[in-house]
Amino acid sequence: KAVLLDWRLWAKSGLRLRNLQFSGFAFARAKSTPAPMAMEDEDADIGVGGDLRRTSQAGHSLLQQSGDDFTNVAPPNPPDKGYGWFVVLGSFLCNALVDGCCFSYGVMQPHIASSFADASPSMLSLGGSVLTGTYLFTGPLSSALANMFGCRAVVMTGALLTMLAFFAASFVSSIHAFIGVFGFLGGIGFGLIYLPAVVTVGFWFEKRRAFATGIAVCGSGIGTAVFALLTDGLIDVYSWRGTVMILAGLVFNCAVAGSFFMPLERYYLILTLRERRRRAKGEPMVRGHIIERLIENKRRERNISQGSLNGWIITTNNKVLGE
Image (cartoon, rainbow, N blue to C red; front, side):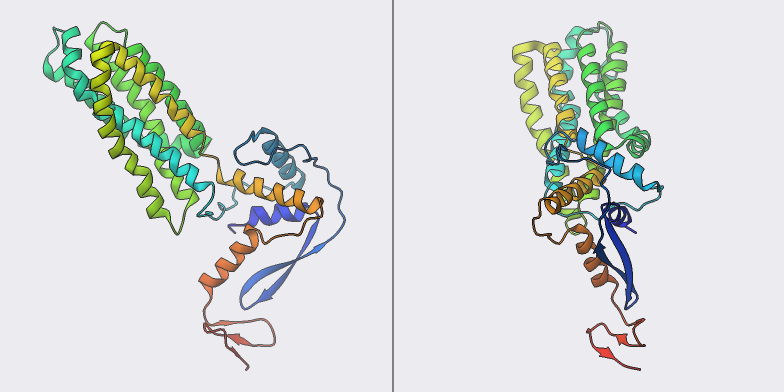
């Protein structure tokens, strides 16, 4: 099921699939047949790091030709390599920027107190508390939006919202307005960044998922240490208001990091289009992710099973026994 979408993409490319039942697992044998190609992908940019707009349009055309409903198709198999490490890098940067800004508020608080002399210490501390609490409290909202629009769009939206909130907070003249803009609106933006940045790593890794996630969340610790020193130095030069402006610009870099969070389905679509172009040029066909997935499933699910070929039985040791 995990590769059903890929099988349909290959079938629409002019391949006739015939199922060959062997030892309880359905393999597919493809026989090439001439088929008109209604989709023109000669000009499609299939580079992973390039402009994906034309590739996406080509993929949508291919799906529309099939006339099938892909809403219930299982997600693709995580590649555990390659572009997934760019996703880890983007998640690392997002965690560093989010937690670095949140936990450096204590460095700014004494300087903020000089601008709001009538505010109590507890009121001043609410700025950082509301910021941290809100971005953690918005987890359900962030997850729902990520399911609807994808992690990349949600992270980039959160980066824009936080940048605007921090920039506006540098001009406020009331502690209550500062808490609302810097703490609440900035916290919502951080919440839209944080959860998708952590979750998206799991879609790209399976065997190395724990290791990749560990690298990603290391950004929180590094960001906390670096931003404390950075904020202290910036305040001495630009005051706390100028420092908040600079933090607004730094946080907007989460949009750049979030652009790495390419949907896994589009990544496999790019590989499929690349393989089609290779076949069109007459280059030798290499074993793709579809066959690798079949082999991996066979390796995992293999046990003593009754085959469909003359009653033979295949054991876990690959010994064939007759009836």
